[in-house]
Length: 191
Image (cartoon, rainbow, N blue to C red):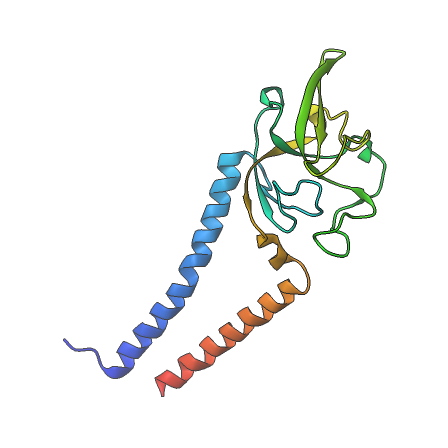
Protein backbone atom coordinates (compact mmCIF):
# COMPACT_ATOMS: atom_id res chain seq x y z
CA UNK A 1 0.00 0.00 0.00
CA UNK A 2 1.46 3.31 -1.08
CA UNK A 3 1.06 6.50 0.89
CA UNK A 4 -0.30 9.47 -0.98
CA UNK A 5 1.92 12.54 -1.23
CA UNK A 6 -0.11 14.42 1.40
CA UNK A 7 0.10 11.64 4.00
CA UNK A 8 3.83 11.22 3.42
CA UNK A 9 4.46 14.96 3.89
CA UNK A 10 2.28 14.95 6.99
CA UNK A 11 4.28 12.08 8.51
CA UNK A 12 7.54 13.86 7.64
CA UNK A 13 6.39 17.04 9.37
CA UNK A 14 5.49 15.04 12.49
CA UNK A 15 8.91 13.41 12.34
CA UNK A 16 10.56 16.85 12.18
CA UNK A 17 8.65 17.99 15.27
CA UNK A 18 9.63 14.79 17.04
CA UNK A 19 13.29 15.46 16.23
CA UNK A 20 12.98 18.83 17.99
CA UNK A 21 11.11 17.35 20.94
CA UNK A 22 13.46 14.42 21.68
CA UNK A 23 16.43 16.60 22.79
CA UNK A 24 14.16 18.61 25.09
CA UNK A 25 12.83 15.42 26.67
CA UNK A 26 16.37 14.06 27.07
CA UNK A 27 17.48 17.29 28.77
CA UNK A 28 14.55 17.18 31.21
CA UNK A 29 15.15 13.49 32.01
CA UNK A 30 18.90 14.10 32.35
CA UNK A 31 18.33 17.02 34.72
CA UNK A 32 15.89 15.02 36.84
CA UNK A 33 18.35 12.12 36.92
CA UNK A 34 21.16 14.44 38.02
CA UNK A 35 18.98 15.90 40.78
CA UNK A 36 18.17 12.41 42.07
CA UNK A 37 21.71 11.02 41.74
CA UNK A 38 23.52 14.04 43.19
CA UNK A 39 21.13 14.60 46.08
CA UNK A 40 21.11 18.30 45.18
CA UNK A 41 17.84 20.10 44.41
CA UNK A 42 19.85 22.56 42.29
CA UNK A 43 22.85 20.62 40.96
CA UNK A 44 24.27 23.56 38.97
CA UNK A 45 25.56 27.03 39.72
CA UNK A 46 27.20 29.67 37.57
CA UNK A 47 30.71 30.71 38.53
CA UNK A 48 30.87 34.48 38.87
CA UNK A 49 34.01 36.42 39.58
CA UNK A 50 37.64 35.40 39.27
CA UNK A 51 38.55 34.18 42.75
CA UNK A 52 38.84 30.53 41.59
CA UNK A 53 40.73 31.14 38.34
CA UNK A 54 42.44 29.36 36.66
CA UNK A 55 40.70 26.28 38.15
CA UNK A 56 37.13 27.49 37.59
CA UNK A 57 36.61 30.04 34.86
CA UNK A 58 34.17 32.91 35.26
CA UNK A 59 30.99 32.18 33.34
CA UNK A 60 31.33 28.41 33.70
CA UNK A 61 28.57 26.21 35.02
CA UNK A 62 29.73 24.24 38.05
CA UNK A 63 28.08 20.85 38.58
CA UNK A 64 27.53 20.03 42.27
CA UNK A 65 27.36 16.74 44.12
CA UNK A 66 26.23 16.28 47.69
CA UNK A 67 29.00 14.69 49.74
CA UNK A 68 28.30 14.41 53.49
CA UNK A 69 29.95 17.27 55.38
CA UNK A 70 31.97 14.94 57.60
CA UNK A 71 33.48 13.27 54.50
CA UNK A 72 34.92 16.44 52.97
CA UNK A 73 38.69 16.72 52.52
CA UNK A 74 41.17 19.56 52.16
CA UNK A 75 41.64 20.37 48.49
CA UNK A 76 38.00 19.87 47.47
CA UNK A 77 36.09 22.80 45.99
CA UNK A 78 32.80 23.43 47.75
CA UNK A 79 29.81 25.74 47.47
CA UNK A 80 28.52 27.30 50.68
CA UNK A 81 26.75 30.31 52.09
CA UNK A 82 29.23 32.68 53.73
CA UNK A 83 29.39 32.68 57.54
CA UNK A 84 28.31 36.29 57.94
CA UNK A 85 25.36 36.04 55.54
CA UNK A 86 22.80 35.70 58.35
CA UNK A 87 20.77 38.89 58.43
CA UNK A 88 22.84 40.49 55.66
CA UNK A 89 21.33 41.35 52.28
CA UNK A 90 23.42 39.40 49.83
CA UNK A 91 24.11 39.99 46.13
CA UNK A 92 23.12 36.85 44.21
CA UNK A 93 24.07 38.10 40.77
CA UNK A 94 27.45 38.84 39.28
CA UNK A 95 28.92 42.29 39.14
CA UNK A 96 28.74 44.23 35.86
CA UNK A 97 29.99 41.07 34.12
CA UNK A 98 30.68 37.46 35.05
CA UNK A 99 34.40 38.20 35.18
CA UNK A 100 34.20 40.91 37.84
CA UNK A 101 33.66 40.36 41.53
CA UNK A 102 30.37 41.68 42.87
CA UNK A 103 30.63 44.69 45.13
CA UNK A 104 28.00 43.37 47.55
CA UNK A 105 28.15 40.49 50.01
CA UNK A 106 27.89 37.15 48.13
CA UNK A 107 24.95 34.78 48.68
CA UNK A 108 27.06 31.77 47.70
CA UNK A 109 30.80 31.17 47.59
CA UNK A 110 32.74 28.59 45.57
CA UNK A 111 36.18 28.11 47.16
CA UNK A 112 38.68 25.35 47.92
CA UNK A 113 38.92 23.78 51.40
CA UNK A 114 42.32 24.61 52.91
CA UNK A 115 41.75 23.46 56.49
CA UNK A 116 39.36 21.31 58.52
CA UNK A 117 39.41 21.70 62.27
CA UNK A 118 37.14 21.06 65.25
CA UNK A 119 35.65 23.61 67.63
CA UNK A 120 33.30 22.68 70.47
CA UNK A 121 32.84 19.23 68.92
CA UNK A 122 31.82 20.67 65.53
CA UNK A 123 33.72 20.34 62.30
CA UNK A 124 34.77 23.76 60.99
CA UNK A 125 36.07 24.43 57.48
CA UNK A 126 38.31 27.21 56.19
CA UNK A 127 38.36 27.88 52.45
CA UNK A 128 40.26 30.13 50.06
CA UNK A 129 39.87 31.12 46.44
CA UNK A 130 42.69 29.79 44.27
CA UNK A 131 43.27 33.31 42.92
CA UNK A 132 43.17 34.96 46.37
CA UNK A 133 46.25 35.63 48.49
CA UNK A 134 44.51 34.65 51.72
CA UNK A 135 41.31 33.40 53.34
CA UNK A 136 38.92 36.16 54.39
CA UNK A 137 37.19 35.94 57.76
CA UNK A 138 33.43 36.19 57.40
CA UNK A 139 33.54 34.79 53.87
CA UNK A 140 36.01 31.87 53.91
CA UNK A 141 35.77 30.92 57.58
CA UNK A 142 34.33 29.61 59.76
CA UNK A 143 32.15 27.40 57.54
CA UNK A 144 29.85 24.96 59.40
CA UNK A 145 27.70 22.11 58.15
CA UNK A 146 24.57 24.29 58.07
CA UNK A 147 26.21 26.53 55.45
CA UNK A 148 27.50 23.76 53.20
CA UNK A 149 25.73 23.11 49.87
CA UNK A 150 27.84 20.72 47.80
CA UNK A 151 31.14 19.78 46.16
CA UNK A 152 32.02 20.98 42.67
CA UNK A 153 32.66 17.85 40.59
CA UNK A 154 32.77 19.30 37.10
CA UNK A 155 32.61 22.56 35.18
CA UNK A 156 31.12 23.35 31.81
CA UNK A 157 33.46 26.14 30.68
CA UNK A 158 31.78 29.46 29.80
CA UNK A 159 28.37 27.78 29.33
CA UNK A 160 26.88 30.09 31.96
CA UNK A 161 27.22 33.09 29.67
CA UNK A 162 24.09 31.99 27.81
CA UNK A 163 22.10 32.76 30.99
CA UNK A 164 23.39 36.34 31.19
CA UNK A 165 22.35 39.43 29.23
CA UNK A 166 22.81 40.05 26.34
CA UNK A 167 23.64 36.43 25.43
CA UNK A 168 20.36 35.05 26.81
CA UNK A 169 18.46 37.55 24.69
CA UNK A 170 20.39 36.54 21.57
CA UNK A 171 19.73 32.86 22.31
CA UNK A 172 16.02 33.58 22.83
CA UNK A 173 15.78 35.50 19.55
CA UNK A 174 17.55 32.70 17.66
CA UNK A 175 15.28 30.03 19.17
CA UNK A 176 12.19 32.11 18.40
CA UNK A 177 13.35 32.66 14.82
CA UNK A 178 14.00 28.92 14.37
CA UNK A 179 10.55 28.11 15.78
CA UNK A 180 8.83 30.61 13.47
CA UNK A 181 10.84 29.38 10.49
CA UNK A 182 9.90 25.78 11.27
CA UNK A 183 6.26 26.70 11.79
CA UNK A 184 5.96 28.48 8.43
CA UNK A 185 8.21 26.15 6.44
CA UNK A 186 6.01 23.24 7.52
CA UNK A 187 2.94 24.99 6.09
CA UNK A 188 4.63 25.75 2.78
CA UNK A 189 5.60 22.12 2.23
CA UNK A 190 1.96 20.98 2.61
CA UNK A 191 0.79 23.13 -0.32
